[in-house]
Length: 349
Image 1 (spheres, rainbow, N blue to C red):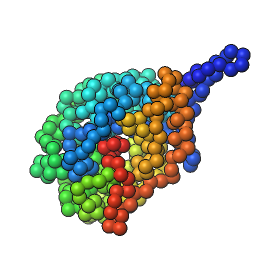
Image 2: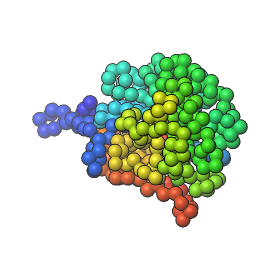
Image 3: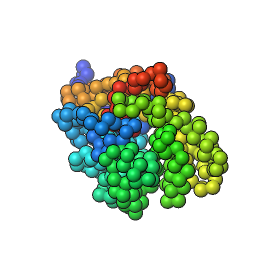
Image 4: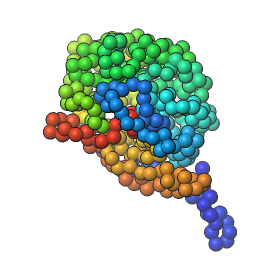
C-alpha cells in the first residue's frame, strides 16, 4: 500500500512507501495490540482501582479511525491484531471494527484477528466473532470458585463467564484461558484450573502480576514468581518444554498427564523482551512501543491532520525508532510505586 502525497518537478506523483517496521535492535514489528476502550465491566483488584476515572468519551478515536490506523499498520507489515481493553466487548458497536478487520483476514492481508476478553459478553457475541473471521480468543479467568471470582473481580458474575465460554466453544472459537498467579489467592488452585482447561480442550497461560497503575493493595503481597509455581506444579505434573508459539510472550510446556499446553508469561522473573515483535495502540490513538515503559507516540494528530496516510506512516516510523530493548518492570518493597503509572486497562493486555 503506497500513499500519494504530492507531485515532483515533472508533475508525476510523489509516493510514500508503507515500509516494514524494523526497530533499532533489528526486530520486525508484526503484531499490534489495540485497546479499543479503557472501560471494563469488572474491577479486578490487581488491575484497577474500584472507583476508576475513565477517559472522557470525546477523547476516544471513533471505530472508523481505529480501523484506519489498523489498516496503516497492516500496510506496514502487521500480520496479527489482537483487540483488548479494558473489556473490548463493552465498546458500543465494537463488532463494526471486528467485521472490518475480519475482511482483511479474508483477503489474506492479515493472518490473524484475535481478542482478549473477560468472557462476560461472550454469550452475546461468540457466533458473530466467528463469522467475522476470529478463530482464537483469550479469556481471563483466575479462579473456578464463584465466591473468590466475585471477590477478585468485584463486579463479575462467574456463571455468566461460564456461559460465555460454553457459547464460544459451541461457535467454534478456540479458547486459551489466562490466569494471573496471585500468592495466597489462587496458587493452590492452578492444578484445578489446569485440569479444567485441558479437560475442555483449552490451553492455560499463567501470568505474573505486573506493576502497572495505582490500586488499593500492595502488589508485593500478591506477587508469585512463576519459577516457584512451576516447581510446585512439577510435584504432580510432568512438564516438557516445547517450541510452540502463538506470537505473544508466553513460553509453553506440554503437561504429559493431561496432554494439554501450559504457558508462562514472566515479565519479572524472566522477561521476554529479546523477541518482542509487538506495539500497543490505545483507544486515544497513543502508541506505546513497550508495555513496561512510558514512552509513547501520538498518532491521533497525524491521523486527523489529513485524509492521506503519509503523516501516519511517518509518525509510526518515528515511533518505531524509539522502541526500547526491554521494559522497566520491578516489583519489590523498595519500589512502592508502580513501574508504570497507567493502568493495564489503558494499554491493553
